[in-house]
Amino acid sequence: MQGVPEGTDIKAIENSLRSLQHVIGTHHTHIWSMDGMHHVLTTHVVVDKDATKDDIIRIKGHINTLMNSHGMDHSTVEIEYADEECRITGGPCNDS
Image (cartoon, rainbow, N blue to C red; front, side, top):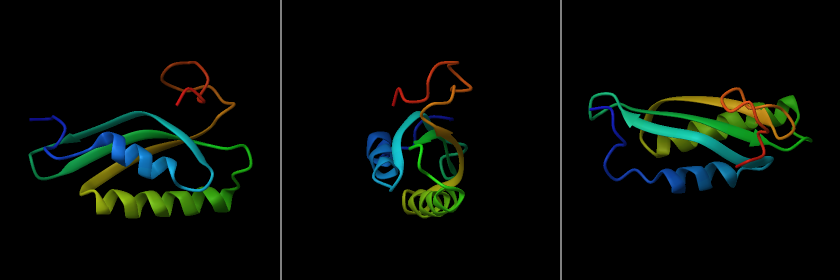
């Protein structure tokens, strides 16, 4: 049952995330449905080096609004700077 919900466009969601100010990329985006009704998203969002704490808080708010508009019941977002190491790959986070 834990597959991508029908009608969900992962690329469109990633593009929405990338359109946010200070967001320069996304990777490791996964979307699935727990039971056919409750959808979950996880992703890494890469921000530019000038993103401040206030910018990050604003980005998180925009992501929450975007996820609600895409029918996500839960999301987990890892915020990374381009010059840091990705926890998953061990490589640079700028490979969006």
